Image (cartoon, rainbow, N blue to C red; front, top):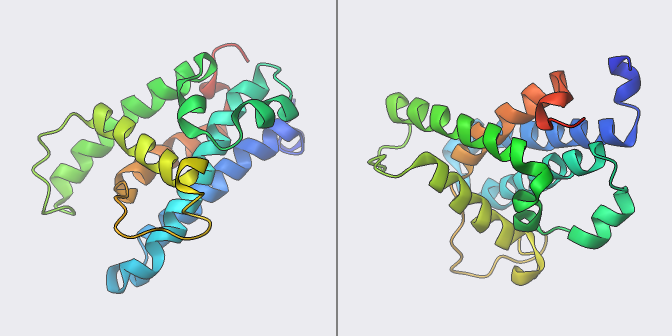
Length: 182
């Protein structure tokens, strides 16, 4: 199928949407406004990140033939359930592979002076996704859409963005990288 035609399909719209939301999160996180007044952008950035991840994780299910309405009924906005689904094994692998690279890039960049980088990047990715999932989902009363109760621990958006945006960028160029069966 021609690339432009693909992006007119529901599957194409989902992967393109994941790319747009994750790219928007990256633009906010690395903006001058974030550098000057990060608190004003933290929740909107995490909201974009959560929605982009949700779309990224729903794509392989759709690509394997699962009906979009069934995905909505079965998963809703439950990021951990989507992340752990067997059809997302390849996405998890791509993200964990990228996590190691992003962690090393951050370590050498000097961007996060407060971090000693003694943690495992793959474990940090999974922890970050679980934290984001809680904020994105019903257990927090959809805190990223409505009210974030204080004090709330949030994941490090820059690390998640550096991982997920790269995977989405690669996927929009070649959606087949997200699944081995499609």
